Picture 1: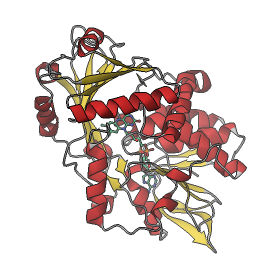
Picture 2 (picture 1 turned 30 degrees about the vertical axis):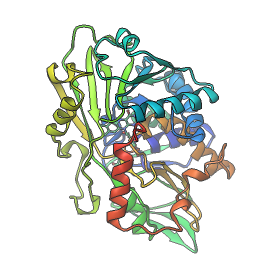
Picture 3 (picture 1 turned 180 degrees about the vertical axis):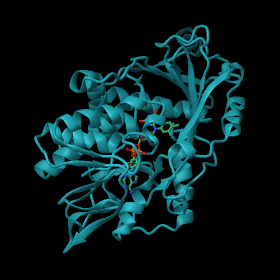
Length: 397
Ligand SMILES: Cc1cc2nc3c(=O)[nH]c(=O)nc-3n(C[C@H](O)[C@H](O)[C@H](O)COP(=O)(O)OP(=O)(O)OC[C@H]3O[C@@H](n4cnc5c(N)ncnc54)[C@H](O)[C@@H]3O)c2cc1C
């Protein structure tokens, strides 16, 4: 019984493919309507560790198969990406990214700032120390993922339950027995808490603490621009934590700002919807000024859309995936760290295997919530660690 955005719907789809019939996708809003469709939809292959690189490689294969498997469009574009260091210390990070990437079989190389400009003419070479080109990176239409997986999951036997609020996971004798919802109780031996920004509310109602912080993230989509071809490589500026990719003839861009806005979902109205999330264009304009020498277009292009959502950050920057220790049948698929949509097809598959076969297809212990059990975080510490992870998303030091 997963709660669905991209992570929950992918899990339901993968359970359905394994022949599990009695699945319910329960959502307080419409399915796939919250943070998932508001993402940038970028896939980044060079991650900080080998496990994450292996997972994203799997996810990339599944993203390419998405339309064949689901019959739904995803409009993915294999654009590649350029990771840009403007400081010597970040150039060293790029050197180690390239080492790790090559060891893991990725097509990565260092290119000159001039070559980067040739590949993406919106990126000016001024002030650039080093650039890593990642051939395998891609982007896709984020609005399609959760809805696409949910539709096929329904065809495979899942019951879709939109506009249904889960108020509590029932646990008896250390085992999940079902959930209470505003429409009644549902019996279930397994619940996947994939409630995105509300993950903590669900778990804490059953006495399970989850160290994650709902964190606002927003982006602009510009009006169409001459030269904004769909296959231009995406650009990531490390120290400013700014990202840009082509989008519908224009550009889509955003930032991991220094002082992110955190949300305590328990203080928001029960009907709170991501479309009501407060947005702050100044955050984006400040970022555009920070990178104006490399990406002057960000200050020039007219904005067509401003959107945002509330992903969840963890203190160590890794997802929270798998069973809750001591409670049989309670699984997490959360702590997305602003990278949960691209990896959802791989994590959904791993969680489905875990539920059906009793173990995951690879060692996912580094993503287990058990890693936090020995430590206790104050809310202040949790927020300051989460803010650091957020701002340093591209590995800048
Ligand atoms: C601006 C922005 C840019 C991003 N860029 C990227 C990117 O480039 N690449 C990437 O991989 N990721 C990116 N992300 C992150 C990505 O959006 C998230 O990692 C992903 O969408 C998380 O999916 P989810 O299923 O956890 O959350 P959600 O999509 O929010 O789904 C959670 C669902 O749970 C439901 N729910 C919650 N509480 C309850 C309850 N009590 N009862 C019933 N249902 C409940 C909600 O209604 C919701 O539909 C970005 C996010 C934003 C906002």
